[in-house]
Image 1 (cartoon, chains in turn brown, orange):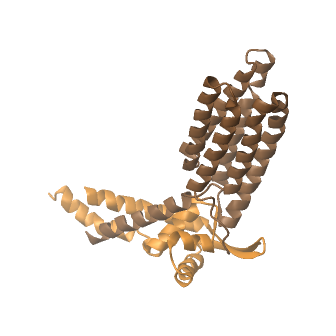
Image 2: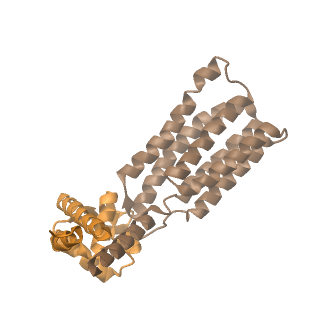
Image 3: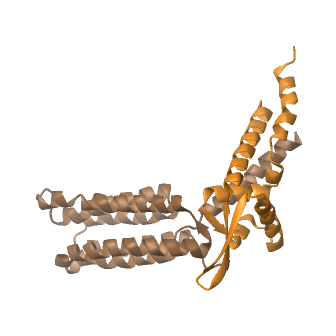
Amino acid sequence: MASTTNARDDLGYVRDVVNRSERNAFPAGIAYLWAAIGLVGFSLVDFAPERVGMFWSIAAPVGFFLSAWLGSRQAYTAGQLSARDGRGQLLHWGGLMVAIFLLYPLIAQGALEGEAVAQVILLFVALGYFLAGIHLIPALKWAALAMTIGYVITITVDGFAWTTLGVLYAAGLVISARVAGGGRGQQPG
Amino acid sequence: MASSRDDEAVEFPGRLAALDSLLDHRVRLAICVLLSRYDRLSFSRLKELTGETDGSLGAHLRKLEEAEYARVKKEFVGRKPTTWYALAPKGLAALAVHLGALTDLLSAAQG
């Protein structure tokens, strides 16, 4: 029947349009920000381990709020606003930060110490990126893969393993940003 | 006694009548589905997503606005004038009814 064929075609068109709207939602600025933070933060484990804690306790929250601001600015520039998507991102990354924060009692009790602290946090973050890759921004699976490879390197390689991880993490994020199209760019209204 | 196939044939006109004539055009349907998915979309983003020309998209949006299915708001983003569109409650209700009728129509066609 012609009407049902038309209805199917129309729904196919609508589905394509909605799918298009969900692509390229990864602002390149956020990827480059965390690539820089990760490169410095992970390399510090090799070069200045006594400064790692202080660096991450400042860089992580600052990066979190800067990312929220960049994401919001990008949504306005792209002309696509969604409180639901914003809430999803906030809960995902905020939840990850809370989970990492909750490791502090274990560290204070001495149940986790030395390089193992950084490795456990690394696994948390890699899992966070992987889940974000599944549920929020597909391209972030590349960053998760880079972090997982980096994790294996930190437990198997002795020299400059954390610097290697920093480079892999930064490269993974840059690749993720490129795969996602680096944001939607500037558009007049 | 009529067969179930005959019953479906009789029900088809009823299902077609439940379709919203304004949302019968796929571009207007896509616009309303997008506006139900997002809080606000700019004119240029809608143009990019639907692939319509300025004139065509403007005409579709005007129809939705006149029927009070969509709300429009103009503001500056940076120094650029931006026209934002959002789905009005009347549009959301009409979309739900239309999609329900479409689903029924397709289910009936599949038998």
